[in-house]
Image 1 (cartoon, one colour):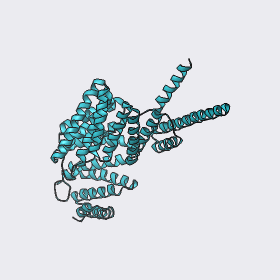
Image 2 (tube, chains in turn blue, green):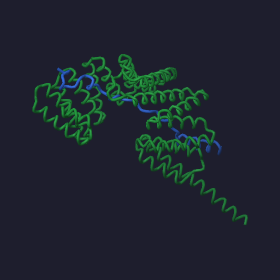
Image 3 (cartoon, rainbow over the protein chains, first blue to last red):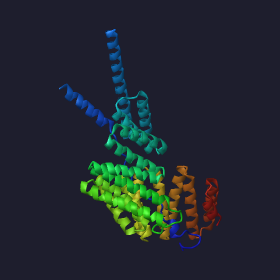
Image 4 (tube, rainbow over the protein chains, first blue to last red):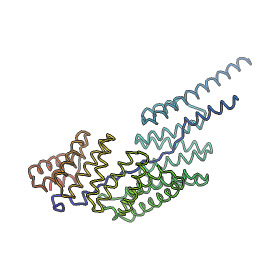
Length: 46
Length: 364
């Protein structure tokens, strides 16, 4: 009998392990910034 | 004298441009390393870039921000907080509102991770306010998602160990209800924007919030939606998370066969993804599920699998849990000698790990 004293009840058998989704961190891209600077430089030379 | 001055000017401007180039180069390498998941390597390059220095405040802001994010991913939240604060100060000095919104969002997430929920809320609100003023829908959605995460964590943090989902103190239920509200607000926007990836993430966390609130049918519905979106993207880690969360919800609905089915899919994916810790957790859940189904042979099989991985990973708490579960399953089958052996191992591990309640259970 799974509800007996020796075997844990359904309460202790439940999973506490919730799988959360990742946080979304805000990013400030240096690659984009560098590419923009590069483009500006090219346009400036023209 | 004029020529001398000109020479000095040329030297200074050459030195400054050299410094800028070198700082940016180092920072770009840091960014590249973080993108491939090497956050420790990224931190080294960003720190070196700061040492070289730059007069371009936009570059400095991006370095602070990325350094904060790298530390966040390394779970060094104190350092993450330090750099996101530097970024916030800098963006405020520059009058860069969009940059301030981003720094505020990152501070909200970091303070949440540190358990400083009330401070986190202030920064989430700043992120939301700036995004609203700028008419930035995507920014608003992200701020609402962060808000939901803060209230979810606040609610979960206030749960006591022995409280059951759906039967929490009012403080917990209020925080969880707020989390659900913010997630729903986020979903309205991301659906309008057609951002399926964001929708998937929110469905997953909303499902977990429903689970804690005791709304298990709603939890199932949200997790099924999350599963569908994960499959659309071929996102196997997200798929695995959804299967595991569905298993949890079916346990509470008393549908143990369905729970086992979903945990098995989660186990398959954990093995494919070579994530041993998750594989162990899933074996443990399966062992418990088969105990509920009173299929003790299968329960023993999964608890043994859990035990082996816990030993491999040197996870003494997991090992103790496995021994306790194995003791119970053997008792149910009348294998008293084996039950006693596992109970003794459980007692030994509980003493070693200082698990007082485990020790008391073992002595029983």
